[in-house]
Image 1: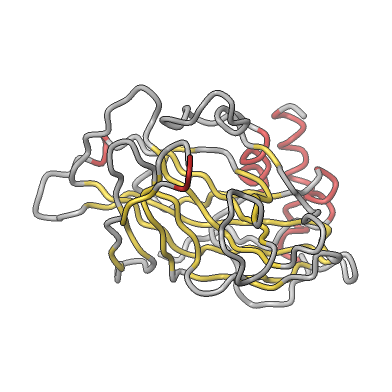
Image 2: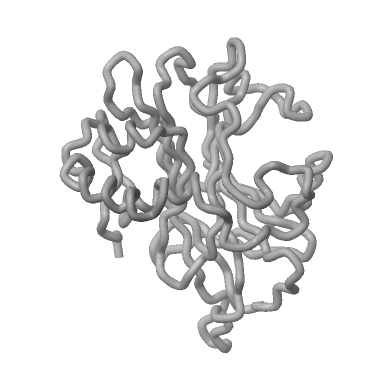
Length: 267
């Protein structure tokens, strides 16, 4: 699909967005059908640092399990990741990235309505080796943020920041999934407002995703007990809040039954 056709799709769907049937009150902010579509179809804005060429999400978003969890798997959790840019040395020491409103919805086969699996700004994570080999990770510098909510964190050289919603995974009905949409918000903030603003030097990439798990209490076992639903497009984090998406939807589903996003920011 080219960009012109995508804009036609967007215009057709504007009215449908406000009428989309959902079973919860909470909605993501300042998103659009174009952003949602792009986040699963356009190449990354830059290559994330340290991701091996053998990994199929190095250059562009992609689906994995999509709408079909393996076998009898019946749990899920949303996650995201922040990377430096391949070949660049990250040096913005007074910049942090803030994250909030992680949420994942699914389109029910039985009702053809959007249902909320989880929404939370209670977020945990760690700095993981950029290639995720052997699950190597170190504690991250995470702090709660009163201005805008959620948390903020920073990168360590040679590591990404991989994060997810705190608490238990969500139990799901694997036979009722016609589509999945995961979304979360991020922006750049200062680590210390009394120090120089170096956010213009902060070239940080953000990608949204979600995992299926075998059970809500399964232990990690070299991806034998979990695997991703999909990995969204890496885009640069900016000073203003942005929404980052991952979804499994066809163009027809986006047109006829788009996910329950809104277009106005909270602040």
